[in-house]
Length: 340
Image 1: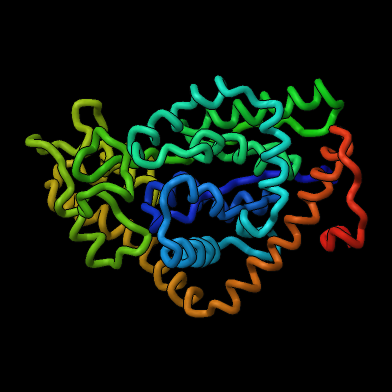
Image 2 (image 1 turned 90 degrees about the vertical axis):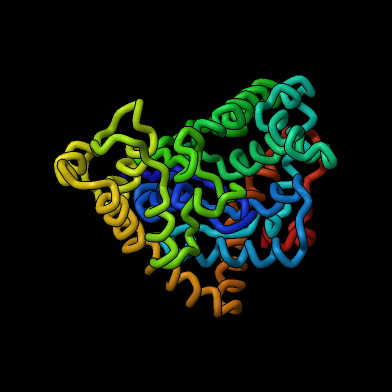
């Protein structure tokens, strides 16, 4: 029997996610864990590159854990853990820093963008973010990494560092490949459909949160920007309607052609109501299940502790190999409890 490939994915617990995050990533996790050896991390160390309020970060980490579980992630089948609970991530980052060039990091698009957004807090962590991401991936001998368009540059650095280390010290890391889900939908703002939907949008009507209830979801879709025309078709000159059709088909499983035929001759009001109902029928049960799971902190702590223990066993196998390759003294088993 062919061994399943290793897949690694990490999302920052930096606030409530939108339906764009759900469709682009979390929706696929249930299937991915069946098809691959799946490792899912809550990238809490990454969040620290931007100023965090302590209580909010803790709350967001629990929220994201509960959301993963509510969306069908099985902690027995997959590994689910908080990045900060496995120190090997930070340890490998230091080793990789010694083979990373400053110019590579200063050219990163996200570093430039975040530096503009957070001019009062341009820290080394912000620049070093892609090296930590590379460590996340390479620790688990990852073969596949689900990525969006904005993460391609970071994955390329991970690949470059794996190849560079292997060339310098001998075969150590697998070189990861990007995984782009065929069904991943690009969801745009309901208020400005030329822009990507974002949870940080100042206009709360521009995005659908995974915490929105049915009434809120339908109200937001009723206010969604369309156009002065009355045709419900997918076209470049109709970004609002095209975005709503994309969302509707993503939540119903219908094709664009089927949706256009379904709403042929219908008004925008009826159309927007149907889109809202389709989204709410999927999101509201997830929200309710998430809140139920969130009420049991002991269960969430147990899930994360078990996940960290399983992740650490894999991570330290790689890290010990790395330490040996670069010439560091081996750790004694009694010193590192994870190796017992």
